[in-house]
Image 1 (cartoon, rainbow, N blue to C red):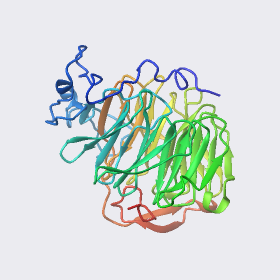
Image 2 (cartoon, rainbow, N blue to C red; image 1 turned 120 degrees about the vertical axis):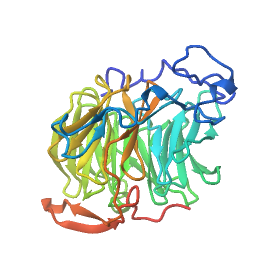
Image 3 (cartoon, rainbow, N blue to C red; image 1 turned 30 degrees about the vertical axis):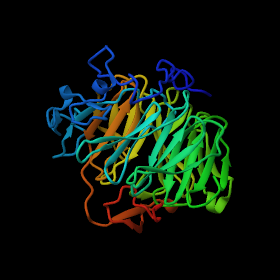
Image 4 (cartoon, one colour; image 1 turned 90 degrees about the vertical axis):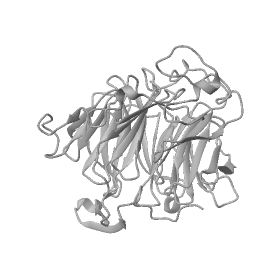
Amino acid sequence: MKENRGDSSNQSQNKPLTSGALGGKIFKFKKSTQQRDSASLLHDNLGSSKNPFTTNFLNLDGDHGSLSSSMNPFAPRGRKIAERPYKVLDAPNLSDDFYLNLVDWSQQNMLAVALGQSVYVWNAFDSSVQQLCELDGLDNQVTSVAWSQRGSHLCVGNRYGEIAIWDVNQGKEVRTLAGHSNRVGACSWNGSMIATGSRDRSILVRDVRAQENYHQRLLGHKQEVCGLKWSMHDENQIASGGNDNKLFIWQPMSNGDQALAKFSQHQAAVKAIGWSPQQRGLLATGGGTADQCIRFWNTLTLQHINSVNTGSQVCNLMFSRTTDEIVSTHGYSLNQIIVWKYPSMEKISTLTGHTFRVLYLAMSPDGASIVTGAGDETLRFWNVFPKCKSSKGVVSNLHGGGGGIGNVIGTGNSTLFPSNIDFR
């Protein structure tokens, strides 16, 4: 079933696409209702001459508004989560489309953001911005972005069903891969492999080193694939969610093109998918407006663990890399960001500020900050978790329901604790 109240076909029709991002007048300051010439529109207070992101200084409050444990009974003792973002950037033409994935943060501390037909890369070290690419075609649109594990390459999906692989350090496109007949709304890397999900209901598994466009087509969803993530610990396991309200678990390298499991507990579109970096086989998924639930799964035993009703559309889920916590972002009707204690699912903090659905979420390389994006055309940066430590990361194993210790997966400095060599 298609999501009602804006999760389906009406998601972005109020924002017509405009070509020529740099030469046109699609960028505007949020405080102004008048259009300006392109030079004026692309100037911002960070000093970049090609920067669509404008700092909203009204919200740069730093530690102002910190929520202490004495004010919040759910917060761990001695821990403070600021209830306001430490930075807000305007992101003109950021689509209010539930099914797209337009923001991602790399291991090299670069933030990729798709605005209409263009992809911009914001450098978190010096706040500089560069336009990476602009798509051809009046009706084309960037529909997904995803960094490789080491952050050297960016996958860019478009409305025509293609993906482009960009070497961001060199600023050039490496190759273009076809195969889908409709827009590519979700991409996920696993070393040199990429899985892509589309409105054509299929998932394509590709190796960017190979000559062919793809080597496996996974079929099972009856509507658009909008959530797609490789496991952080098992390079042979993928979770996918769709507008058919279904969750699929795939093992393409050992199980071929047949799904390992299919789950139907969600009652609305499943876009929010998050794997735990600390517990092998622990998966979290979230449902849309008619569902509003976060569900947890053991993908080693293929069992449903538990669920919690959030009271709002679940748009994104991401586990902390350093603590037993998870962050969720929400749409109808509260537009909140919630930090939860896992597995008790007690609320640690509720963050507000976005005026539209919080459709996009990404995490900084050190695991401390998140960035959220919404149809209100802003990017908001929040400090929510402790930073990653340099000690070795050890993962708990969920297999068989036990609490045993699994293998060492990484050093704690990696974004995804990658178990595969990154594509070069």
